[in-house]
Length: 87
Image (tube, rainbow, N blue to C red; front, side):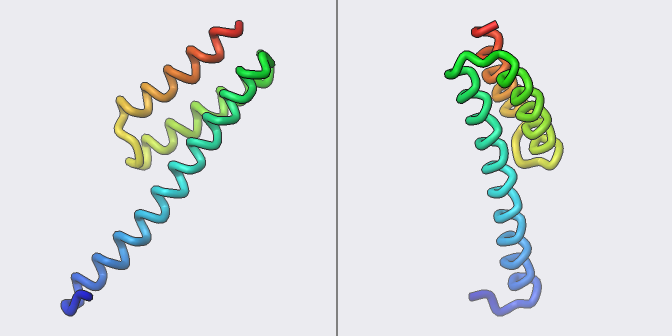
C-alpha cells in the first residue's frame, strides 16, 4: 500500500475512473448486443431504432475518452453495416 499522500490519492482516483470506464464500456456492449439481436430477428424498424441509440452511446463513450476515435468509428461502422444488411 502507498505511504505518500499523493500516491494514496492516485490509487483512489484510478479506481474511481476504472469503475466509470467499466460502466460506460458495459453500456456500449449492451447497446451493440441489442442491435445485433434486432438484426438476427430481421426486425428492420427495431434495428434502426436501436442503431441510433447505440451510435449515440458509442460516440458519448468516445467523447469521454473511454474509446479511441478510430475504435468508436469501427464499432459504429460494424453495427451500421449489420443493420444495412437486412435493409
